[in-house]
Image 1 (cartoon, rainbow, N blue to C red):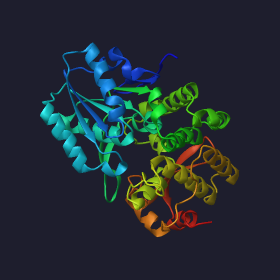
Image 2: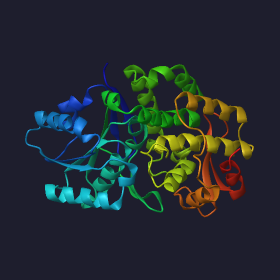
Image 3: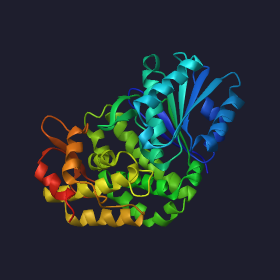
Image 4: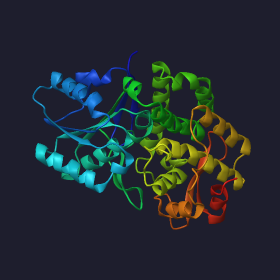
Length: 367
C-alpha cells in the first residue's frame, strides 16, 4: 500500500504523509530536517517500541546528524510546565541551533508538549510530528496547536506552531491498546458529525474493520480525517473563525478531563477521546434543547459511538456545577458567556455564543 499525501495550504504549507512502514523510510524522515541537530521527544510507552527505528532510519540517510532523546513518562497528567522545561533543557544539552528540529514521536501529549518546546526554543524551530496513536494522527499532530496543561484547565499555556511535516506510520497502530484505538475513532467520528454526514455512514459500514485494526480501513479513515482538518486549518490557521468547529464536543470533554484530574489512564476515568465522545453527545443534546437540531440525529450519533466501543454518558461522581465552572475557564468561553460548538444536525456544525447556564446544566444532569 503506497503512502497517501494530504497537502496543508496557507501561509506555512506542509505535507501529511500516511501509510505503513514510514518510520523506516530514512529519506522521507530525514528530508524533513534542515539542520544537523534533532531531539527525538517520546514517552516511556512509545520510545521502547519505535525510537530506535526512527533514529536508525534518520542515521541511515544522514549519518552526520547529532541526535538526542527526551523520554517523558506517559500520560496526560505529564503534560506540564515542568516536563516542558525538561524538554527545553534537553535541547540546551544538545546544543540545538536555530535550524534544529524536534521530532515528536508519540501520541497527542508528546506532540503537544514537543511542539510547544519547538515553538519556544530560540523563538521557534522546526517540529516534525510522527504520531503513533490514531487520535494524534487525525487531530493533534495536524494544525500546529501546541500546549501544556495547568491544574486549572487543559491546554491553557501554548502556541500556534505548524509542523514542518507530519508522517503517520499506520503500522504503529498495531501496538496501540484497543482502548486507545477506540478513543481515536471518537475524533474520526467528529469529522462526520461536523462536516459530512455521509462519512458517518462510511464509519458505520466499516466499524468492524476499524476496530480490528484493518490497515486499509484505518489508512482511509486517517486520510479522510486529515483532509477535512487540513482544509479548515488552511483557511483559519489561528482559530479565529470556522476552525473552532473542530472543537465539537471538546468544551464538555475538556471539563470532564479537568475535573477528573487528567487521570484517563485509569480504569474508571475517561481518556481524551472517550471524554470527547461524551462531549459530542452532550453538545448534540444541548443543540436539541436550544431547538437547533433534531433529537434523531443525536440518537444516530450515539448508536455509532457505542458501536465503536465509546462511552456516551458522564461518568458517575462528576457534579454538573463543577463541570460548568470548568467550562467557564475554557478557552472557548468569551465575554458574551459560554460559547459552544453545536450542530443543526449531522454534518452541520455552528458556533453559538452566550449559551445560558441553565441550558448547559440541563444536559449535564443525568436524564
